[in-house]
Length: 333
Image 1: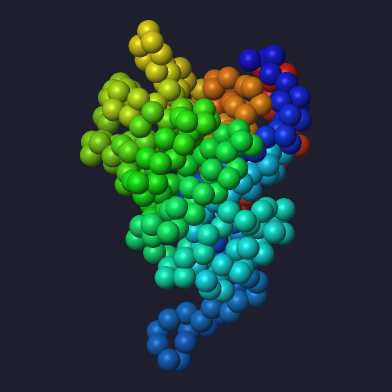
Image 2: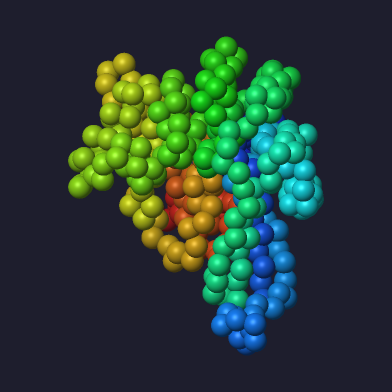
């Protein structure tokens, strides 16, 4: 793999349009301190000193695509509320387009508010709806896809089970990708897990694949068995199984059977694993769009995830940092 020149590859990314469809979220951080107990009830009084909005869910995937130099097209559902305004402002501040955001007035913008005092995470408050989006909203998503069909290079489906990626929409997007010959990458969750048939790349983690089958693998052999059963069931070209500190396994669905390989995680000081999965799917998409093989894209994505988990909170992977550290890593091997 020493022949990978990620700088040259990433320089090509500026011409690549990658569409992200899924659950757009606002991650709101309330930072402050606790100094006393309330006289009204035996609870702590939290005094806010700072409020920090960040992009979450599919919006974080889109941000990662942007910081790697690609051109993301973010498609998702927001409400008509104050959180949607904060989310749109955060997207614009990060040079993100918002024309793919569809307003559905009957549901709230998905927002996860984390209350943090003296680096301690006290509580998370979620505002969301998990109901399926309306037929009208689904049709608007498909209209956006068809309108941009010619310029799309890759499509990512980013599913957090918040109701955007319904069975009907998943089926329609798969049909669209086949008709228009677009690579379709999926980052799944529990619901609709087996609906993603015939996609190019499917990226679950260990918990997701075990939850979907309702069986906890006793060892690596059993886990590989679940992965191969999944490939047979959904007929994806590639299954990329992320295993946290144990690295990533790649399963290729070839005419000669299922081929498997693995990539070890680079030993790093882990501060926060939040958003690492978003970094992996984003990095894979960018490098596939510029001509890298799946194995090369996953290798680089694994390294990119190792860089972001060193930092606290959800942070994107930046192009310059990835180039610097990855080339240094290759030269030291």
